[in-house]
Amino acid sequence: MKIQILSDKVLTKSIPARGERAAMQFNEQVAAILDNDGGFPKPFKISLEAGEHPYRPGMYTFDPASFVTDEYERLKIGRGIKLIAIDEKVPPPVKAS
Image (cartoon, rainbow, N blue to C red; front, side):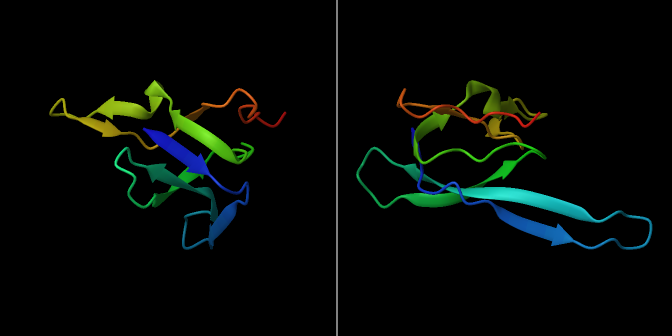
């Protein structure tokens, strides 16, 4: 399965503090799954960890660590999606120091 990143733009969502809960910020990047049948790409969002650089434009596949099993031993995609570059010309994202 191929994943395409068209832009390294990061979408930021902020949730203000409320009661005892601190303010939260979520960083996401838009990607698209390309199916093998030549259909239209299916967009989805990837959550980025705090300090994680966005993926550069290019073609990727899912890192096997992105998959988990639930309590009924069914395979599903976990919360922390990670991608692996298919094209060697696209370097992987680097964690901020």
